[in-house]
Length: 369
Image (cartoon, rainbow, N blue to C red):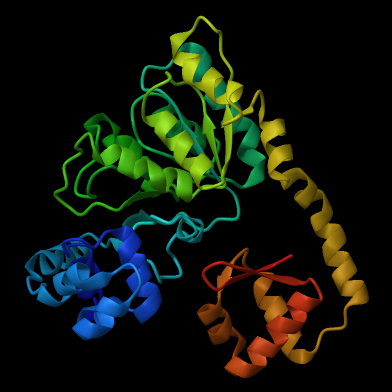
């Protein structure tokens, strides 16, 4: 592990520096190491940082906890994902309070082209269970990554149904990767890892699953997904927090309606009634609203049109051939695979964008249209 990881871990420990200020600092300096080595007067001048936070950074000297965490990361082959890492969930970067550092175990692509969060109450009804399983079964042809929170109830049903229908699924945890909570889900977690899924958290090892961690965890569930589906929930609880967060991030929210007399559907009905969620009755509606059906139908047509009407230069063809192999690719990987100079690659990508062949996404990611 590099010394940069040591500074990344340390950045999460500095008093008065939360994830919002950490993001400001990273945008200014590029790396965690440069933040710690910056002069006091330089730090103080950064908007939103000021004297107190600048002095907290300069006064920080205890790297022992960071060193201990690195030993854990190395021993258990954990993937640390810093804000600037290409494997960091790029959708999450668009959220103002995205975690400074994430810890990941698994193989699922956290930047998959389609990601849905499915959440709900721990004390579900048979109706909620059936609808969750049916929704995931009907989505199984869409190559979707299913995200949830590994809790009892709807979360666990969503993870299990994903495995049953050969969809990758990621559990976002409210504790460190040295444990699974609830312990009853240890085998489920193993199955998820074994079958191409993953476990993700912003909490270090030895972090207990304390109650206040879970609302914090919920912003990752909402932020890394294209849309959040609420199956069953009361008017108060974790699922409502996640739905509100998703709304705040300008994400699509769907809710399964229930009986007006059913307390476990009261939250879903509230979200629908107050225009905070779209009423959802089946997978087709979700696919249509998200525009995925139209995209699938027109993909071949668009590809054919590009080949018929656009003449590509040698450099542009190299870029296109690479992009055909992956849904999303980071600029550094594209540069490496293409073998082109930075200026040649930049010129080729610009021309492809102008012709509508390629799109640029946040985090220096590129994809074919």
